[in-house]
Length: 86
Image (tube, rainbow, N blue to C red; front, top):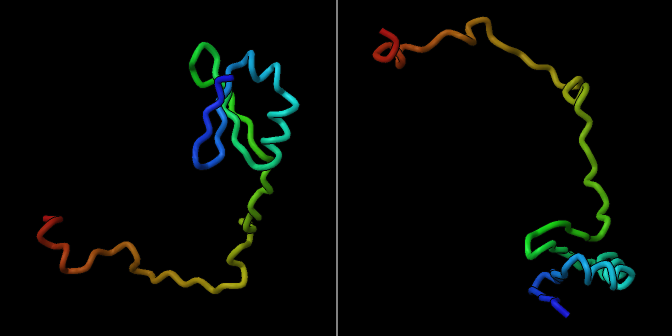
């Protein structure tokens, strides 16, 4: 059995071994383990728990209740920039 456990519950198995132990590996993944499947010794697939998505912030109209003000001279440089723009 080519299974390597790390501190963060990562299990590495070959494709053939994953095929033979699929049900067991699915149970471990559902319990929080991360399963790395390799093919010919190279990373191939990762299995892990289905984590809930982070709630997304509303984007459209997110600032509709905030009054924003942009001064008329927003694009004018101050005198401290004179040496750089000559």
